[in-house]
Structures are given as C-alpha cells and as structure tokens.
Length: 260
Ligand code: HXC
Figure 1 (cartoon, helix red, strand yellow):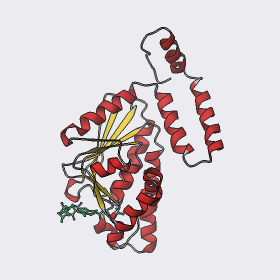
Figure 2 (tube, rainbow, N blue to C red):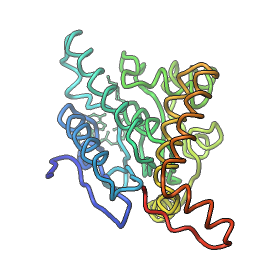
Figure 3 (cartoon, rainbow, N blue to C red):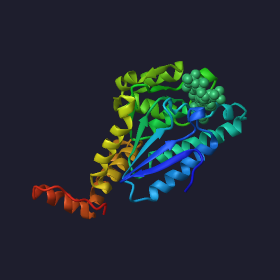
Figure 4 (cartoon, rainbow, N blue to C red):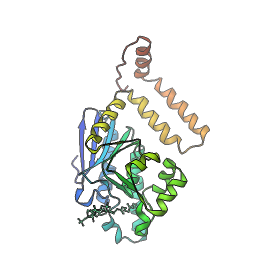
C-alpha cells in the first residue's frame, strides 16, 4: 500500500518504517496517525517480517510531537478523540506481533517520545533529544506518556520530566534507562539493523510470544502474568522450531528455524 507520510521498506526479514514529514519535523497529525494504524495492521499480517525498525525522516527529528498547528484549534471532544486515536494506534504498535526497535535519530518530544516508548527497544543517536514538553504548551501528555514513562523510568524521574517539560539529551536518556544504547548518528540505522537481524535469526514464535508475555504480563498481577508465561511457554512446544532448537543444541549444530 502507498502512504503519504510514511515510507515502508523491507530489508530481508526486517521492515524499516520511516515517518516522513521532515518539514514539520515528522510531527504527528491525524492523517499520519491513521496511516500508522493501517501500516501496523499490514505489518502484523506479513509473516515474512520478523522485526520492525521505526525511525524518522531527515537529520533532525525522530518525531517532534503531535502536530501543534492541528491541535491548537481542537475543542475538548475533538481533543479527546485525537488523544484516543494516538493511544489506540500506539497500543496497536505495542501489541504488534513482531518486535519493534525505535531508531531515534533526533528530537523525540511529546507524542514522539510516547511513540518511541511504545516500541520494544529504543536505540538513540548521540544527537537525539527526549522530553514531554506538553506542560510548556498548557497541555498534558495524551498518547500514553503519563503511563508509559513511569513504567519505564520510575515515577520520580517521570514526574520530573512530565512536570517540567525539560528536554534531555541521549546520554541522560541512557542514564535513566529510557534508551538501551546510544550510537553516533551515522551508525544508528546500521546498529538497529544488526540488532533486528540478530532477533530475526531466533525462533520467530519464541520471540513473538516473549513479546506478548512482556507486554501483556506487565499489566497483570504476578500470578496471572506467570500463568500467562506458562501458557506461552507451553505453546512453543507445539512448534517445529522448538524441536529443531533443542535438537540442534544437543547435536552441537546451529538451528535452522522456520517460524513454524
Ligand atoms: C507542528 C512542528 C512541530 C510540532 C516542529 N514543527 N515541531 N509543527 N507540530 N510538534 C515545525 C515548526 O513549526 C517548523 O515549521 C518546522 O517544524 C521546523 O521547526 P523549528 O521550530 O523551526 O526547528 P528548531 O528551531 O530547530 O526547533 C526544533 C524543536 C521545535 C525544538 C523540536 O520545533 C519544537 O519545540 N517543536 C515542538 C516540540 C513539542 O512541543 N512537542 C510536543 C507537542 S505536544 P515552519 O513551517 O515554521 O518551518 C504533543 C502532545 C501529544 O506531542 C499528545 C496529544 C494528545
């Protein structure tokens, strides 16, 4: 499918999805959110895709937030609908069967930081900047930021960021655990592809069920989450890849996984 504000490319088993509105620093308007929702459905159906990399177009920004020009004129009901569109789109991303790596190549502010937090793994360029500056605009975060940021970095650090709107650099984002790794800008995509390919080389059902156990389990009590873990663990025993993986280990050879 053709998209106006997105570029979807496939590199072997890896899909690279680029948000492409560089003149507005890839800000998320309603059209872009709707396209994202559609592309996540498309990716979820594509079993040839084993991992996804999400990045922003241009040198400057991953995503500079929700589109402020579009948001400015909303009334209360429209604002709620806009928040819900972003929330449901990002939740779809979070629950996408394949793992998603955010390659954060510049500003990840407001909705951009919230988008990155909906990915499984965050890699940043040295020039990346993060923040939830909504309170500087007279708003609150509305695409899940008040919920995901404390889950990732803890309530104290999240509260400081959400109450001040302060922008932090990549090293600080690394220090607080918001990103997994920081790379020079010209190496970011290469490193994201390397990681995505390492993941793509593992048993796909095992990877997808691990993701599901993390994303579903984090919102459950421990006993329910462990029950869910036991269920997904058991499910892997209905796959050929489980037989292949265990046999290959015992036969001292590399496994050949089929994704079945
Ligand atoms: C719309 C945006 C934008 C945004 C940048 N642009 N961010 N347009 N929405 N979020 C546009 C600018 O208007 C400008 O357009 C062009 O992109 C380049 O931006 P500049 O400001 O000229 O660049 P620079 O001086 O380098 O500053 C970069 C920046 C700044 C620090 C990232 O653009 C900035 O502060 N942007 C807003 C960041 C923000 O507050 N994000 C949170 C939004 S609220 P023109 O046409 O003038 O060239 C949010 C809420 C989510 O995300 C929840 C909703 C429910």
